[in-house]
Amino acid sequence: MMQKDLPQRCNTQLDTMSALGQVAERLNALVSKTSIHFGVSRVRIPPCPFKGELKMKFNIAAAAIAGGLGFAIALGLAGVLNMLVEGYGSAFLDMMASVYPGYKASGTAGDLVIGCFYAATDGIIAGGGFALLYNLASCCGKKK
Image 1 (cartoon, rainbow, N blue to C red):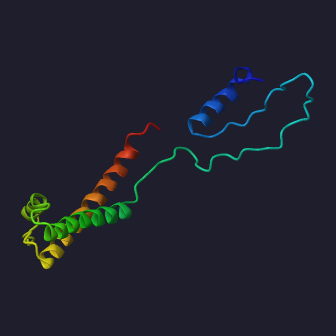
Image 2 (spheres, rainbow, N blue to C red):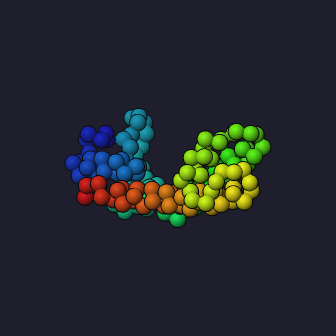
């Protein structure tokens, strides 16, 4: 029995299930003339646990924490390497000093802590904001 031989109801079900990534359950035709059909297969494929559409969303808190840690580590690493190697990342650090009040990019440890605090705050706002905008945009553009 091939898919084209199935009733229209089954074809629609197969198309819908394959669109959702599920495996359709159907009986296979006999392969050779010597085989004997013994009844319905006892193997049942459970339905997909997701009802309807699978909506993927960002975890806003996790994105905010990852953004904050990532940007603070980037600024801190550039600052430490600038302390060790003269002139390393100075353009980046000067740019951050022009944005963050209180951070001077002077190459001292205290100044670097202030810069990392500002970078973490900036990364938290950016990461959380990106996740929030993505979650809002992903639910509005779908056809129902």
